[in-house]
Amino acid sequence: MYGARLFLTIGSLFMAVVFISSFVFTVDAYGSFAQTLASTVCCTLVALLIAHVLNRWPGRKTFLVLLAVVGLGVRVGWIWFNNAAPRSDFLFLYQAAREAAAGNFGFADSAYFMSFPYQLGFTMYEAAIIRLFGDSLFALKVIGALF
Image (tube, rainbow, N blue to C red):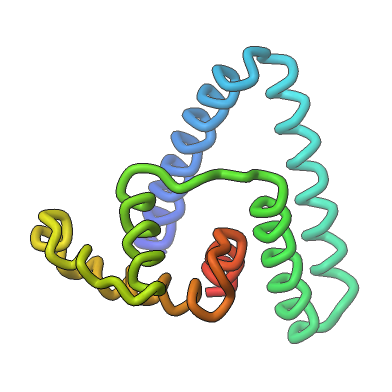
């Protein structure tokens, strides 16, 4: 009983810190406290409405399936509307995967892969997806969302 309360308290404090820091970052990004507050309230209300409907209407198994579908839908929607290009290490890994998909494995001798050889697995995973679906960041992102 004491352990559960301690865990709940620590978890709540962690979530409060994450929420406050995210809110401050979003105010900086939007440049408007009112716009950030309005979007936060709207998103919270929509999330609570969806959670309420999914919790009341279907059975347990249907709820889990609908939750997975809604979660995947939100992720794919984010991928579709937010065209974020890879940067830094992810850009290097993506370019190496493109080379591997084309049959050129010379990237494996680079200083990056000599220092971080465990990244070769992820690079080859991306190369396989690029080989199957073509040179598409969208396919990589959607398959990542599925996982």
